[in-house]
Image (cartoon, rainbow, N blue to C red; front, side):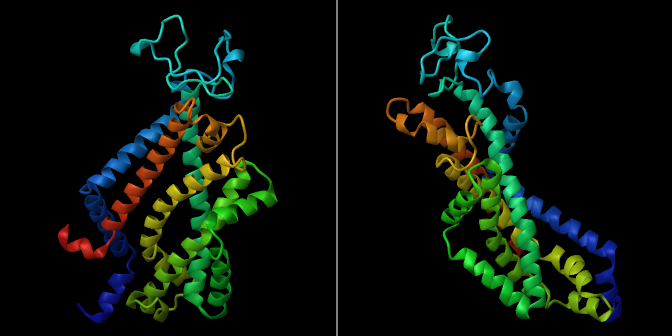
Length: 318
């Protein structure tokens, strides 16, 4: 095959699509072989099912006190879990995870909290990836003053601890879930911008980019159609791990009263509301903390598995 025919094959859309499909199939096979990644995916699948079917699984409204339920229930606050199968009297209403300080069913709030936490993680990371990818790609491809201006601004953001910067942003904007999402997304942008810039700097020196430029491709075509699709691999891993960090940051802001506001069921705010009951009613603190830990663990396991599966140095072992 001549150099010209090799160049044409490299630029042929069908050849590129076939090569890309083969790469992702190989990545999927490597990912399946990693038990930790499969364990993380299983945990995440359960959490997603809980979030989707929360209204059907929840025995009570998560925002309404049992005193306002239909029919009203005469229950003391911070009642221990009552499970009929484990010996709780049948004449008492069943509350699998107990009752919180506002006499609301803790189990129902845990189920709906999964929906909110996953939404927070995916929405903030999606926002940060879109903005970070654009900024990092422009800085890496054009260089010069583009690179200096964008990356120095990213360095300024990175100079502050992410959680403290998020707290400052929410303090200025006002407490609330939307402002918390925006703050977490803003403080996450520099990480994705730096990863994308480094990846673009590597890919832009490859031969197929030079061939596209020689055939008359403009900067936008080269950047968005040639470089970006081949520079997304490290961003996928960073984004998966970033979801776990976003969920932790959202829980921290809600714990401080700056995120989701009562009576919205959110694991961080549930921890904050019952933190003084850690010794008198430890189950009210344990369950939301355990759910946060389980969610973060699932994304960390998946992220580690993706990092190994996408590592080209492991190709010989697949």
